[in-house]
Length: 76
Image (cartoon, rainbow, N blue to C red; front, top):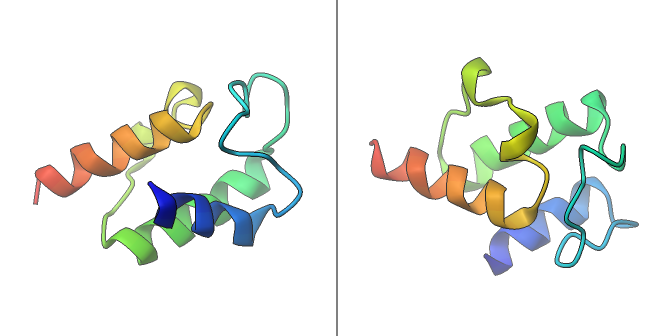
């Protein structure tokens, strides 16, 4: 989880990812941010986030992103 927070901080250092619970719903992350986040997560965690995984629920919180990463790593 710490690595995830570090990766997210490189994308948007102005956001408190650890405490924010509506990153998508409140418009904190826009579509360009998501593209950057997905690219960074794919590289950092050696996963492939597919188009069907690009749902707001998967990116609204750091916990949801972590769950998605764990799910994708377990599929390998």
